[in-house]
Length: 120
Image (tube, rainbow, N blue to C red; front, side, top):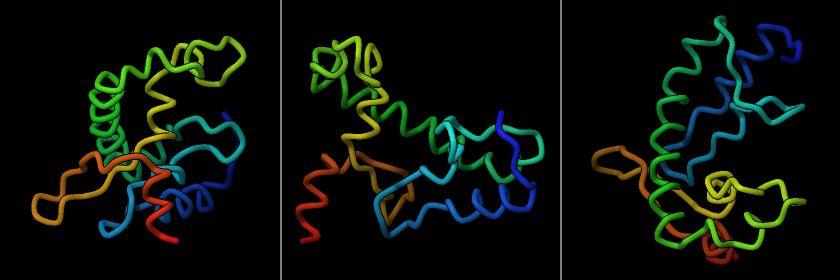
């Protein structure tokens, strides 16, 4: 892993708390250098809820990727692509998720590009 000051890492992870009124993003839970999921015993408390949320999102991504047959996408088939043989990773880039205002659980809300078009 990469070396960070504990207080800096804790601050970054805390700042990554999802906003229940915006699209779900867990990008602050990844290493800024290599983009791997932060995992360290000292950050376990801060990461617990985020890891649980990531697991829920992975299930939702898998369901939507199966519906859209993302495994047949050119980026997933291309050996030079960062998404090669990884439709779930591509799904995380393509799909937008939000929190239900009633039950607070995440749900699939369409493609990210559609969300961005609505903001213009």
